[in-house]
Length: 196
Image 1 (cartoon, helix red, strand yellow):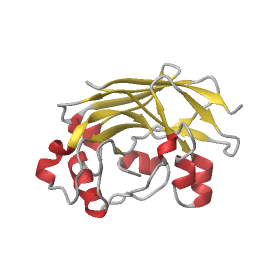
Image 2 (tube, helix red, strand yellow; image 1 turned 30 degrees about the vertical axis):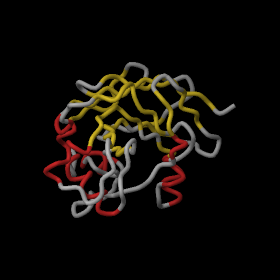
Image 3 (cartoon, rainbow, N blue to C red; image 1 turned 135 degrees about the vertical axis):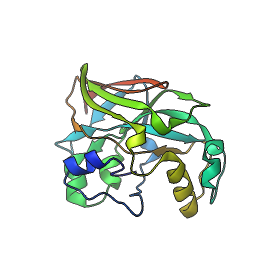
């Protein structure tokens, strides 16, 4: 989801999508696990971290009722919606900027039986806090997102919904260690490397 925290939309000078969420897709090949490297591609001069809560779908759903949203989940995990910011601005849409290999770190594990509606979320780069917020500050709640997306497309077991990032995004450099920590979920940690 794009621009799902008001403060992040404001820091990039974007309007908040108040009526409907801003939905985009990331390539499955962008996935990398906790401990893996985020590789900075030569095609981009600015690659940003974006700490996020990821919802992990646990069953096939279509037009899922909002009051049963927790039943659709296998659990939640931490995610980093890594973005080639310069390419995102150049393209005017998100597919290329969001989908390079290694641009979707997730982990460290899927945590089930947890309501993620109000959890602390923090992103650190080399130990310095860059993002700090709560999932309750989303414009569109996890419950709404599951229902909304399932109206357009069937969601399958293992599908991930990255729910948006709070303010404080910034660039990554080779050698950085980026951590995304979510209360009761854990810490996702990845090193950053230049393309070889």
